[in-house]
Length: 73
Image 1 (cartoon, rainbow, N blue to C red):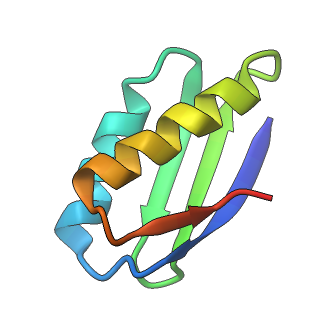
Image 2 (cartoon, one colour):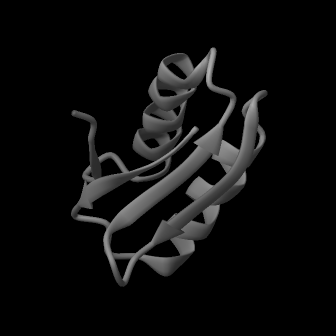
């Protein structure tokens, strides 16, 4: 499954790279992209664990930048 999520207050390219690196290490993630320019997180992961992987990805983002929010609908 592949979904994109809006991010709020992501203002550092270095932080985006750190987020991508951390999220890519989550088991089940096949592809991830974090863009400062578009303020989006694009996540591709296993269908059966997708919701759990999204939760872990959000936690990774908050560890890197506490001010950044990922909007999960």
